[in-house]
Image 1 (tube, helix red, strand yellow):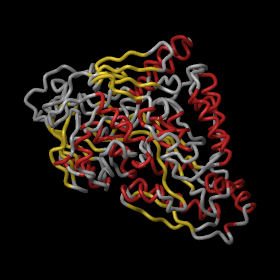
Image 2 (spheres, helix red, strand yellow; image 1 turned 90 degrees about the vertical axis):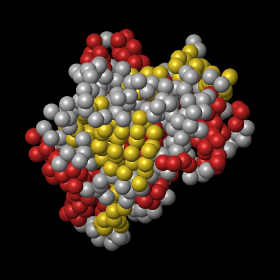
Image 3 (cartoon, one colour; image 1 turned 135 degrees about the vertical axis):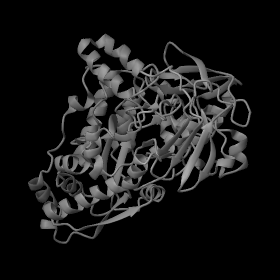
Image 4 (cartoon, helix red, strand yellow; image 1 turned 180 degrees about the vertical axis):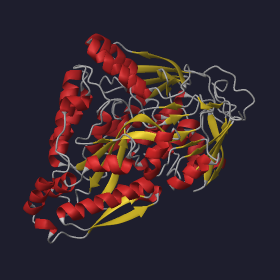
Length: 555
């Protein structure tokens, strides 16, 4: 996923004054994960420890094609085997395939100078690889869900929508093999961080064109990142090994990562306790308090929100009163304190805490406040009655869809009980494997479903542009012309005051219509052995192992 341009925020915050600076420190601390290079242990010898890391990602990644992926599980693998123009590191935006770049005075033209890097098959990484990859994402035939992440580029949206058919009119060009020129529609302060986002990573043209399923097997995957895929046993594990062709291979210390796909939290915890796993991000929520208290689990900030997605195209959730009733009937305080127990916060709005407004110096969430009251059962019952279902009478049969794991199952059962108790409505539950769940949700084949979104970069826009009409990740079918106008205007201006004013107003519309029902703001809960060093965990949900190493495992 993409990350925020916090260097830009630093500059703006310094101009804004001391109070803003304090907020910025909090944000930067949140983004810089534990044990990052430069912290304790960095630069030390790895000793005689075998440089093998055993990790758990919980489920099979739905796809490793940068043009098609939308989920954190897939991003996690691709971040290790691919690299974009930039890479997000402990110090912010770092050079990746681009060694340097120039930005025009009007901030509309970026000229990237590529380093002498090669693909894992030995072919050089060229500027045309980026042109090909980005136009492939924008090609309507690709149907890339994240195509809108390139709409900052001149004529990109017109080409993706079919309004423009000549790809040469899109503002990305290879001036020569090592020089890439990008022209934007409007100044975009976080564009450099976006160039690290998986959707904007290059792909090897000959590989993609010779095999439509190139990204589905270890033997056909060609990457350019710190690691390469040595083995992929579907629904079991992926083995990554250090790439000997990566331009910065001397920085990479791990020789191998054995990444299993264990969905049951209790099973993964047992594997961690037995030493079969060195790190684990899939825990049983019932065990979290004890594991945190004993130091066997840790938390790190994460800018994310978990919500109820309503299918606004279908009855009865095409009625805002029903959506509000289902949202207000849930007790978030009980959910975070009695089920999750990991430090999550009740969400009474959609954009999470931790994103500063560079104009006011305040946190976006704190600035806007809450949009509704938690567990407002009386109002929920009134709204449901006004919609024609007093005490739930006559309410149609509906089903809540979720991807199965311990946490999601516990949450689903809690929602079901609260809706029954507070609204008199019986909701059926249905669980699916992650990949199937995503596709079912994308096709709109649901009534209610679990929704979780982690920021791609450090700006409220990464949450708010999800819901524009026809957006690639708008899986709720919601549409509001005024909302679309506000988001489009915010994206077209470099005036931060207008941008943030529009984004606040857009969130107000989203919450007024309750197109989604926010439940809680997330936190990253994980297990990691003390001998695992140099892992970079970000508040944007990803974990980067480029700088990771094992030290002291045998002690």
